[in-house]
Image (cartoon, rainbow, N blue to C red):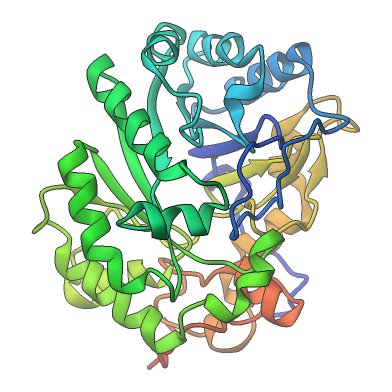
Length: 349
């Protein structure tokens, strides 16, 4: 099949998760930041009215979870207004703050506005390791205080961890810390070298370490005192299926299929790590539905049979799909085979 042909049914794909980068401003300087965010204002960010129009359009055809992210989403004066709007439209709202601004008062406002859960990033089991990665002294202490405030206020929270060579051996210790803190989910992310993360290309674990790390996480699935969810590692779905052919619930790459990312200026992407534009909300009258259903990029990534290399013939291609952002970062082609997969397909199914 020609790579430009599309064998997809638009109605079979609805967004289940939408991450909206409500601002790119951030007080941290994390080494892996896909946005290379700075502690400064950014021009062209969506206004409150534009955000409301966007949320209304999304709710007109789907009921995804809206992830209010950044930068630091709490820097927006209208963040609780936007959260309340999404909640009133029947959209599940979660937020990804960096932790510095999360205190008891903030937690109370989050709950009142309909925010159901927050994610706090911890990338080292100690303050020294975490602060070095985050680029700000005291970031670890702030993250811990944020989880304590969430726990006191009865707000669900999860712990996110970006896995690199510098902390790969700390994964178990970070997972155990997440359990002690009372997190509901431990969510490891596998580094994608984009944004400021390009500078960490040498810190990306090897394909073999990638496989070993996912195997270890799969062993912990159901055995840990905390739920484990893995992001930016679509091979995880394949590994779970290999271990248990009846395994369900862990999808591969959702980008463009069930997930979309909206940048601070309203550019729609399949994910935050692949900056290929799928549509501009400002130019499309904030019609996210139109972009979701007609974008050439979305249509291409949904057609997994047309992926390049072994991804296009792999028997696990419909549950894995490979990381499109990593393929683009390494080859310049988001439809190319996943460069960090060691699995060799047996047949085309």
